[in-house]
Length: 288
Length: 134
Image 1 (cartoon, rainbow over the protein chains, first blue to last red):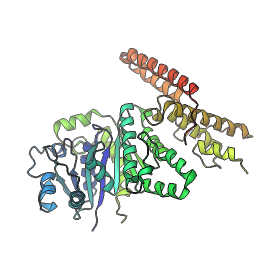
Image 2: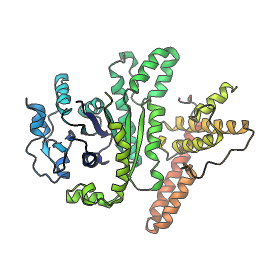
Image 3: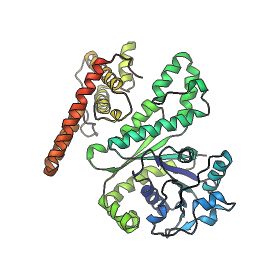
């Protein structure tokens, strides 16, 4: 059986990716899916802390560095159907050789579950981008402050460049501040077939977009609008899953090191999160 | 049969050429909000001058569609979620301000800065003659 792999990433740190990965893992395991949560954040792994685990006996570094099976490093979370591969607490020994990256994906795409969630961290490092693009679905978590939105556009430019890298000729390299669709419009003028091929490459895999820590009612439309702008200027297809409110209970649950979906099931955040999960489930059905 | 110019107008509003006027109104408001100062496109997506020209082209397209229409535009269905314009966005901030008097001076200061950004952006648009994007 082939699991669905969803990577959770984005341009800016602190948007709640790890927090959401944990809550999604629990909520989907409670729906009966067998879920493996993987902490692949190279800059400050902490998924184990959300479960109150202080000193994980195994971590992702052991799995990637040694010739051992994935099963041996999976930690119990106390939640039925949900396992965890903890991230390394050292600086991750990131390697970029193709063989290493290929083996890493094979090990992290564990076939004995229905769903694998990769928390790939934030930013545009090769490791994070590689995993984000290797997953079947990319879940992009954003906040709506201006500084966050700017970083997300930077992230999108990077993902687009990554998607085109394998088919671009050296003389076609786009400028640093490019926007793919206006850039493709200029190519289309001279070579429509080439522009179509490049556009297909940009659209090869859709995003799911989720706005987190929303304060004001008029910010709730921003994920939908960002997705529209993403389509209009970057040529990437996707779906806005919706928004989640700012809620003090989130902070409290992290302080308690207890997942909010278990600790505060009546919280405003959890109520809204439940509807996000219902919207997410149809995208997780294996399509391959 | 629509002219090429009219088809382009609908494209600028990101609509199918047969879109009803209600959709034109909704899309126009949505795009104003996207491209106006403080909108999503102003956070490093487009250069100020490109954004200003696109906004101007969208306004022209909207006005041409409305002029060509023989019937007055229908107001959007009130049961549907409606995207507020930039002015309505500011009104919503004002309402929020009323409920948080302790933030009043900070928000007024922020709005003064936003107005100054808008004034500078307008000057840059007017002084730049690059070709519109897209």
